[in-house]
Length: 253
Image 1 (cartoon, helix red, strand yellow):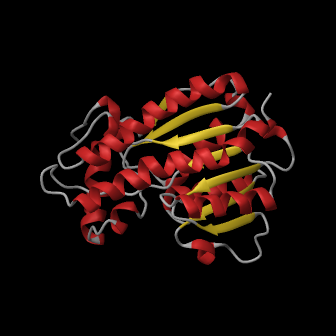
Image 2 (cartoon, one colour; image 1 turned 30 degrees about the vertical axis):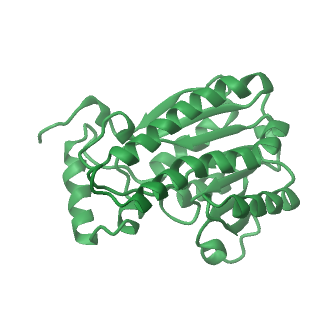
């Protein structure tokens, strides 16, 4: 039985200062978790008077920074029941035109960052017989023009998830991945998209989804809370779309 049922449940959430990551932090807090929220923004986002949040500055692609965060989490919480690797970045460009620096950044944050944080926290997760949740994307299986490198990093996350589930299952650790479609967040704005253009994208794509809207961060966060709960105790090694039915195809309204 996972230690998720303990009173002092603890989660580590990367990318925890904005968008889906921040929603996950808030949902887990409401579910009784203490949360270590790792973000390049550091403690600038932590709500006042929130002793159940440990906000840490951490670039997940920086091995030294990850180790510092691990030591702090271990010192303050001592164990990790759930690790949510939500930190990510996105960019769109043709494969023959993207700067090599941007390609490296996508790989370093989305793939290497997930690996580094998992390695760092794994001994505590094993001790708790806990859960690891990784983040893929609908673009891993339904890519669009200009997303080849980003899609590749997310495809690698799906392979990593299945491999880790096989590797860690005998030790009582579950590993799953979530593949959201377009969710209202800051990721495209952080990548430089104009806010007006982003709003138009959300509206246009939402009309194409069977459920008639794009996702909200809470839609994904609530599913994360389910996956790390004992109710999902026999679920591991799977990549689950949380996408408003977009994998079914486009609907013309």
